[in-house]
Length: 353
Image (cartoon, rainbow, N blue to C red; front, side, top):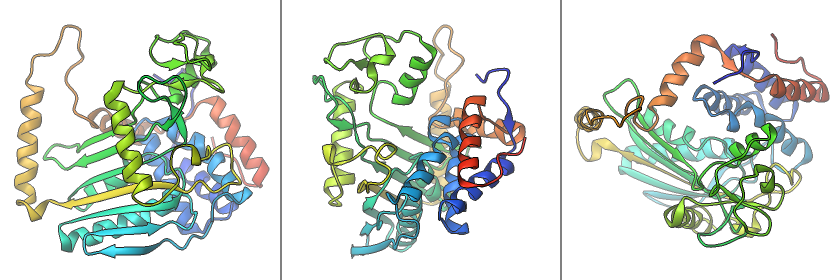
């Protein structure tokens, strides 16, 4: 829930500021629009931790030379339904949009396409790229490896990334199914927020620098660690590390620098993307109806006591997007202050309000 003093910024106003920021940092107008669209979509879905708050970090990578403002994103190896893409050290969003476009185009003729990507960087909200496949009536998948911020199952120190996975599926409902998840019990952003507020957290979220469970969120920084969602979360993180990093020969585990800290250093992050053409298997409308029936059956399950209802993956984000398109996007005074300072630094007008 937003604080009472939180301003709501109209979508076009926030997007305009983002575009101007990235142009001032060296991107073309086209690419500034691409990355701005990813940030706005992230905000609209209520995932502010990966939205406009991260703009200064992406721009700093461009200004410091850690990311290439004009990458030559290209296929370096291929078969009919699989490609290996080199991102030429571009910002992750630019690399990933181009790679997903390649995947979708091949899936139209091959029925399915998988891409491994190397020499990229942090790509923001993982679901953005499978949502591109959704617009073409396809099932989409994406994953990425990250810097080591999570302990192995049974371990006491960070050793693997909180590697995200997203899958999108079209339905006959107003909303698609959208699974977008990382592999820790709770996100690092949530822990950081609780540290700022000075509140206690449940045991089992993090370990301190000595590998001990703690309810103090400040113990996460700088040398604590997130905990995985049990051995299943750890296992999934390993598999995503392999599909994103090992398969594409990107950096892995401790080779990956923190993208927002080492802003002058290439990260060589790895991603994977997949698109599945539903028409290869059955008529798309029939598929959507079958998924709709599945949703109806699940939603007919009796709710538990005190429950607000049964929501499908991505449904609450869909509702949030409809709300924010009307009201504008909430941006906290603290974030606005940070963005105003960045605007002054690069010599552009601040967000109009």
